[in-house]
Image (tube, rainbow, N blue to C red; front, side, top):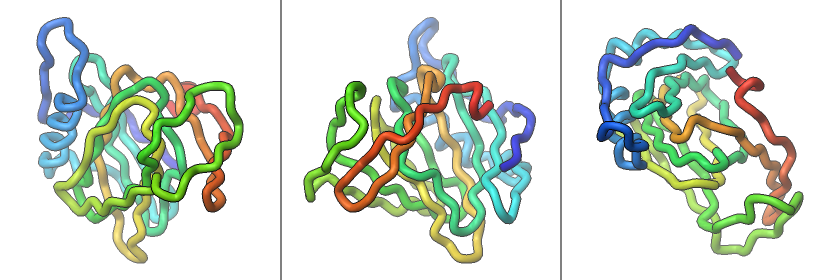
Length: 182
């Protein structure tokens, strides 16, 4: 993994003075930022690990430009109390997610019911917004092509909870704090 210095996208979004950005604001930001071809082309790509650049998001949000080598993914995780949005700027990503509200505290292992799994393919120009405690994994399943995406979260990520999954069993494995990835 490599971390690149912060950058500011050419596209900016200003929320109403003093108000927190909404999911729609975040999605508009990632859509407009992904259309900045100069910014997208400036991301250094690594053949083995994801690369990222921190961006200035709207209204104090946390935003990232992320490069995904072929065959990489995030593993199952959530973004705790943050809402967010992401959009594929180049290539194609796949999102596996859970359509179930999970308890946020007081558990280590849950058995999921059969009808909670969702999948969506996100080619360039496609993305989504999501609410608090959205559990998902994002993958670049291409055997030979990088993908690039833009992500934004508000409030800035207080933590990321990482999970393992074996069939219907979801297990909380680790809680990461900002100092672990910045």
